[in-house]
Image (cartoon, rainbow, N blue to C red):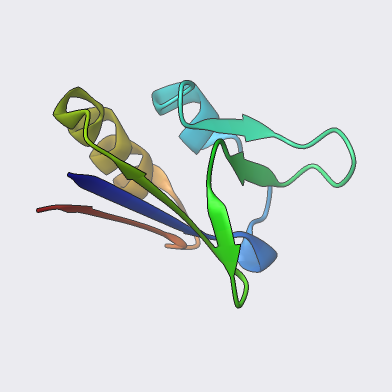
Length: 76
């Protein structure tokens, strides 16, 4: 299981996550911030739980590229 979490309110709209993991992230046309696709919101955090381990590496790259460090990625 791969768990990706995004703290969207702190997003600055740099687009790195979309470039590195386009199947998990896209930019909102409304406010220019990142959206975690299929993420479930709870208290300002959007979380995606996926059984697909092939998404782990590209999401780690997105996490490392994020200048405001609002993405977390875990593999369990």
